[in-house]
Image (cartoon, rainbow, N blue to C red; front, top):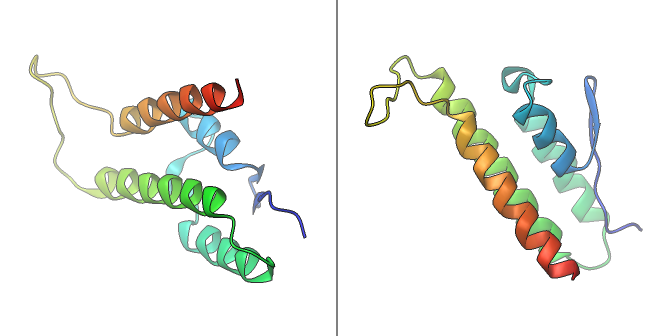
Amino acid sequence: MSSTYQIKLPQFEGPFDLLLFFIERDELDIYNIPITKIINDFLAFIRQQETLNVELSSEFILFISTLMRIKAKMLLPRKEVDAQGNEIDPRQELIDKILEYKKYKEAAVE
């Protein structure tokens, strides 16, 4: 059994990184991402594995919790503003986390 995981949705199929990349670039609307389906599919996937892949599971927890937080923030009516009074896009946090994750992932490969 493979130790990699692909998210499979009607509008997207691929790894975590690619899903987040498309959300970052506004090519996928976070409102249309069914988080419950992604979680259930991932749980079914790890139940089929002979051993638990801790790295893959921790990546999944990080990304799904970030998606949930951003989706929840976007549903709230009040707007967050920075020190200059500019509206803060909650997706920026996801973008920052993706960039930080990519740095660590690239450093681990080297």
